[in-house]
Image 1: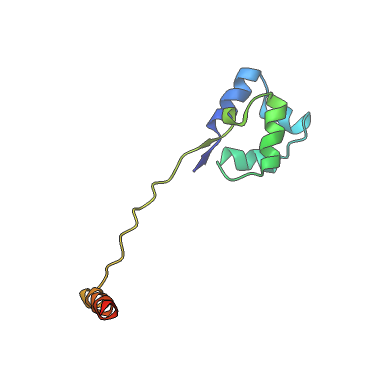
Image 2: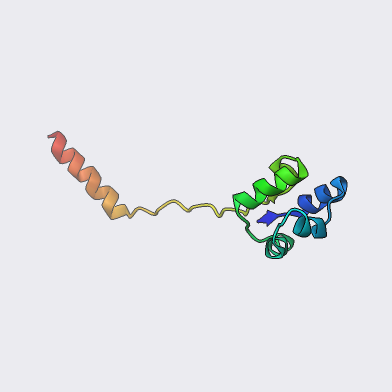
Length: 93
């Protein structure tokens, strides 16, 4: 999950408001809305915010990793294993 909590904290530290982003730096209100909702934005938007705030991307965005379910090993049937063994033994003769 993408989180922009760090953006709001960085903006507060730097003294830059959402209003200033929109009026002075021409960041669209739609992009601000997407950031507020932790939705995906383009790398162009992230780069623009980094330049405006003079900070690395880590001060703007945080990625929270989803848990990845473990992949279960495929079950092999006893018959297919037995057939493979029989083929090998025949080819060795």
